[in-house]
Image (cartoon, rainbow over the protein chains, first blue to last red):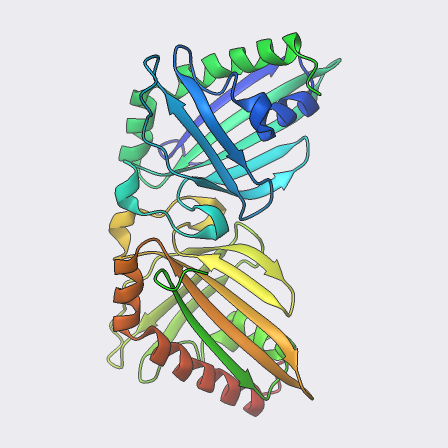
Length: 161
Length: 161
């Protein structure tokens, strides 16, 4: 890990890894919690395999779409780990640097903790100090904490079938 | 495939997939043929796993180093397929767009052909038409043809142990 290029979030939550993983990898279970309200996720595409597409289109409260690039899954360990990047699109095609202010690779881990809980980590890996700092300034830690809370609430309130 | 974003080379050669794959994935067997002479590969680092480093430092006949960024392996199917990208470095960290004029993902396939031969394909996948065109203008097709010839000659002339 390189503290200047990575942003990191770790939380213990009282829902199991399997349900968090499912909520992260199933469009209908991802859209309800994936961005901080009042922003909403209005479209999600998931092709859960290395080289497959991960796309989530966010919109503000008025329905205006935020800029979005299709990302690419890199590693998938069912119920335990998920890695994707915005630097590549589907089929590992590099994304155009002009399409985003910066790219990052996200590493999520889901580790069983206690009785039915999970130790959840999210790491965002950047090319430069400047892009890591910009991502944090944009609200990475706060935003990803908020959506983790939304995610846990969603998983508790829904049958997740 | 997208003809405007991809460059593609296909050749039938009379050496088996296993030896071509070995030459592509072993530094001491890669350095002798990897760039068109009189350019030379003066350093090579290979960590052959998804997320692992692929780095080859080229130099001109006078020993001047060419610009180089560390790449990242994405998929490895022993003896058959190799995918890496220059858009990411080791550990899937995005590379700084300022570090290269463009990034590409390389897909190599090695398919048994006839009696001890191989159908070899190399695909370079780009973000934009402009970068694909620039890569071709720089000599992709000619350069990769030349080094494939050097590769075949090398494999035939050496024990590959």
